[in-house]
Amino acid sequence: MKLKGRRISAPATVVLLALLSSCSDDASPPASPSGTPVAGNPTPTPLVATPTPPALPTATPTPALTCGLSLSDARFEPQRISCPAGTTTQTVRLVFDLGADGDLPVTINRVSTANITCRIGGGTCTWPEGQLSFSPSVVPARTRAQIVATQTFSCGSIGQGPSGELIIGVLYVNTSCGPAREVKVTNSLALG
Image: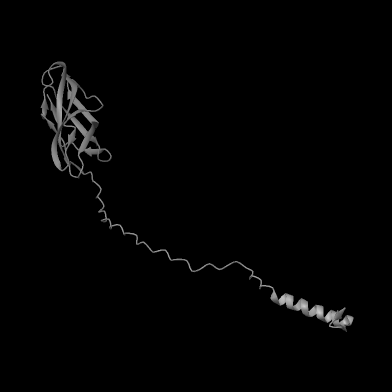
């Protein structure tokens, strides 16, 4: 290779090529940076205030309704029954007071008797087992009422001047206010 009439040796040619190659590398544009581009700061979302619901009033508990019951002793009305000759059917009443002392009315479901003694000299006397008829059947709350229970029974005499008595040991009253209650009968029924 000739350059302006001078001869350049082979080693000089290698050096020259290296310089040219170095200059070529410097002239190339810089490489773009690697990696994911960083996004700019996001615009903050404005906070929306949530309205507070009005406070509900505290509920006052409703007191439970109570059922109260009071009973008086019972008595026969009338206190004497005539038992003529032969067998007859008689009606007798047992009267007592019932108080509905609580907040609820009291319903009477059943009135029945127990421990019956029925005797008459020179005659017969039969008191049927089972429930009695009664009225009224409902006593309003916080009131008191007279309950009249009725029953029919048979009695009769076979001679002159019969006398006897009917004794009821216990009167049972079943109501809507708790278990059955016992009512004492204060007098006996005279038979004659």
